[in-house]
Length: 289
Ligand SMILES: C=C(O[C@@H]1C=C(C(=O)O)C=C[C@H]1N)C(=O)O
Image (cartoon, rainbow, N blue to C red):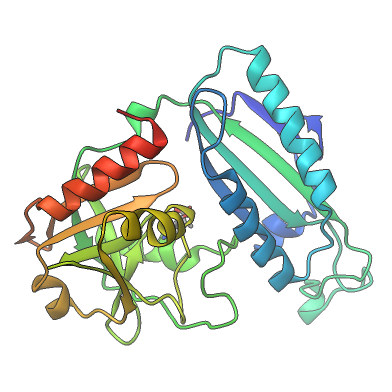
C-alpha cells in the first residue's frame, strides 16, 4: 500500500478517521479512484456524476459545495507541491452513529441515525503512473462469482468483499488480472476494470444491470470514443464461449486507461486494427502520446 502524500479528512490534514465512522464500520459510503495527470484529473465531471448517483442511492447527507471546496483545497496543495502525476482517492462515507446510539441488530447500529453526518475524506496517493500501468495483461477467472444486487449495481460503494474473495481465490500472477463471472456464469468485469470485446465492427461489453461497477472510463469510451471510431457498441450478457469467439479483448479503468488483454485462461487474443483505432483515439484525446 502506497503512503498518501496528502490526506484530508473533512478539509483537515490528517490520516485519522473517527473510530465510529460508518464507512469503516459498515462500508456505508462510496468512493472514486482517479488519475492525476499534470496536476489535473481527467474525466472529473464523470467521476463526480457517478459519485452523485451512489450518494443518492445510499441517501447520504451530501453537500456538493463542500465536496467542491475540499477538491479545490486538494488541488491547491497539489499545485504548491511537486506532485504532478499519481492517484487521487476520494471517499464519501456517512458519518458516525448507529440507530439513536442504541444500536440496531444486536447492538451493532447498522441503521444510520437521522443525524449521522457526512465525512468527506480526500486522500492523495502520489505514485508513479508507470508503476501501475501494465502494457498488456492476461485474465484469469475466479471460482468466486458475483451475486446479483440490483440495488447497488453500477455503484462504486465501499463494500468490496466479493472482489476480495474472488481475488484471494484466483491468486493472480503479476501479469494477470482476475476476471469475475456472476452467479449466472456471465462475464462481468475484472476486480479493477471493466471489460470489452471486439467482434467485427462491434465492441461488446457486459451488461451491468445486476452487478458490477459502471466505470467512468467505460462511460467515456461508450459515449464518446467508440462512436467516433466508427464502431458499434453493444451492451449485453456475455458467456465465456461468446468471449472466445471475439477478435480482441481489452480492459479499462480511470487510473490506467485502456489495457489490451492477451488471453483469458489461456485462450489467446490478438491485437486488431479496431483496437488500435480505439487506442489511437484515446491517446489523442487524453494527450498521452
Ligand atoms: C472497486 C473497484 O472496481 C472496479 C472499478 C472500475 C472503475 O472504476 O472503472 C471498474 C470495474 C470495477 N471492478 C476498483 O476500485 O477498482
